[in-house]
Amino acid sequence: MPQTETWTVGRLLEWTTTFLKSHGSDTPRLDAELLLAEARGCQRIELYTSFSEEPSESVRTAFRELVKRRADGMPVAYLLGRREFYSLSFRVTPDVLIPRPETEFLVIALLDLVNAAGQAAAELAIADVGTGSGILAVCAARELPNARVMAVDVSPAALAVARENAERYQVAQRMEFVDSDLLASVPAEQRFDYLVSNPPYVKSSEMASLGPGVAEYEPRVALEAGPRGTEVIERLIAAAAERLRPGGWLLLEISPQLRGEVEQLVTASGAFDSLKVIKDLAGLARVVQAQRKRPAS
Image (cartoon, rainbow, N blue to C red; front, top):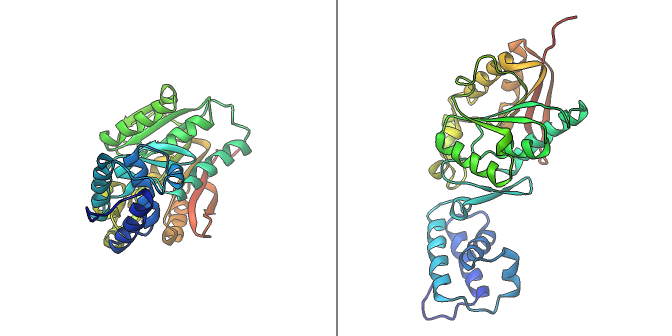
């Protein structure tokens, strides 16, 4: 940004939008607005009544630094330290995957199953495996006030972020945070009514083709599954077969390209029925849900 110009809010946004677009941002105007609101310490909507105002030098300096880091590829969510999910604001850091809107379908699927079974007030045991920032676990605990929720992750740093989010929304007292590779460190006798997960499902060969800043900044362990993309999902299916109570539900977010493989893995396990695939708003397979078989009567 040239130093001799008079930089009003409006001009800052116009210049920065063009600048970020030239550096590969898919949402340059939105990025510019979010970063300027952060630098000004205001809500984004307040910018629209401030176009003619000239921010202070300290605000412009903070904004320039944020814009530079965004142009270098740093995701906006990490620059702000937060991301909205399910109408809530969650703390995020480079230790956790940035929440995506598609994952909200996992929350909706869980609540639909609970409500259909008349369990909204029940003392359910729910596990969120690979919790990351804790979005699924916290949403489940908020929406189901009598549930006990276990947030599991292999990363202690991620669990710290999840705990912070749980404390922010005052549900930490009904949650347990477990450092574990899937359910390996969870007591063998522990059983669950619902197991939800947004596991790694990106094929190793696809990592380089992810969107700008994803592979460079987001935790690889939360993205890459292996050569087939189903390596972690296959282990989760096996773990769910052992740890779900009869009639309990497994809910997994998947890549649409893996739908057939995941359905085959669930069926081949022999432990589940009522297999269903839920599509997102784009009509793409997004959630696989299956019910743990009950003993034959």
